[in-house]
Image 1: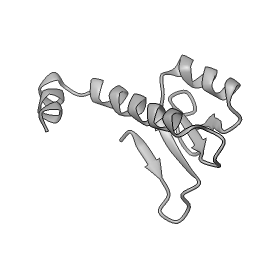
Image 2: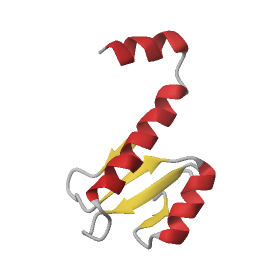
Image 3: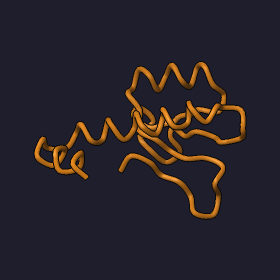
Length: 83
């Protein structure tokens, strides 16, 4: 799992993040907070209120995806990358 988003509320999402980067993002952006109902070390909640650029939102999602992908066995990684 690399992203969580509510079905009824599209104003925020949770993404996995490198712990050091998670802290830096929280310090830099008010819209990034410790993951709601998640492990606060590894997850951030990101509010989509129009203040963060779409490129940053995409970067955060991609970063989360790559972290999860890297945690999988090499064979599974290869299968996913082929798709």
